[in-house]
Image (cartoon, rainbow, N blue to C red; front, side, top):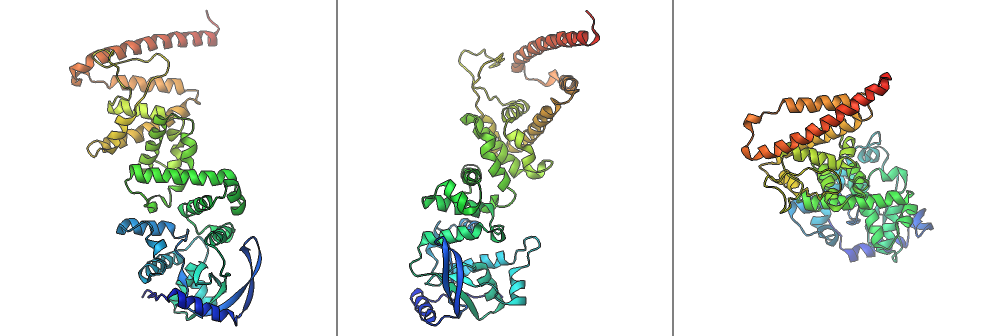
Length: 428
């Protein structure tokens, strides 16, 4: 049966803690407050006295999921720290986290049941738990009556408390408990406190590039949830196996024009949402999202017969145009619309997945001594399979132009093959 939270009013908590501090159990060294060693007094309080801290980056994703599911205000948890109903929901989230096993690390409840409380909680002078929220939830579920706590000075600020969480997150034994969203939100909070990426990197024992990438990945996740999934704030959708994708994405779209950046994003989002339809992990398709994105989208447009080149008023009536070089304006919106439209998205998804694999295979083939033969064989197979009898009359003119272009290319390839063969055999 789940523990029933009873919130002691703040003024009463503060008075109880102040009285206990007059005759503490002792003191303990603490090194993560104000960048110096501090001696914090240790007290023992009733298990009902502490309250969970709601600005908790370990539970951030779960909080946002609950807010989205229940259609609550964005600051439901932050504003409800003193409310029993909100504390109860936070307890339920923490209970679930405390019961989640990570690798070979024992469950918190198992350790507490075997050894009792080995590490003291860290609380504010008003009883808010700064460190040890999961342990408190586990102790409550085990029926523990009292809990030992170190107490921060009454003048500790909200920003200093965030600094403490950051310092603890930098320790290897604790940082694995954060999902990548919570980690990025902690970094974002430090930025909003005026800290530079360099300062944050030093505090978290990471590189400046890693800090900047975490912020960029979070921004990409927000774009996906808001603009594509229509689920702003529902970070649970991207919590687990999406972390690497969103961390890779900023680099994969760098240097592209705005249209191709969006096209690359849509490739990434579609592959992520349809990862059960691809072979291997999504990151294996990074080339298709990155340097091969334009090729992928062009292949997809050909497969779906969707034009991605805006027509000009001077175009011939068929709208067909052959590009012999130079920059051509490209509009990927029609393809994106096919992926969003319920009536066309199934075929569009299939075409995109196939285009990704084909582009990657072609790129790999370029490094093969038989790549040219393979490409010509594939082109031959495509042409053999063409059935003119089913073609619409208004496509005849376009097909004629394509065939003329193909004939020109074939003639050139013939000359190149003859020239190469001549050089190989030494003949004239």
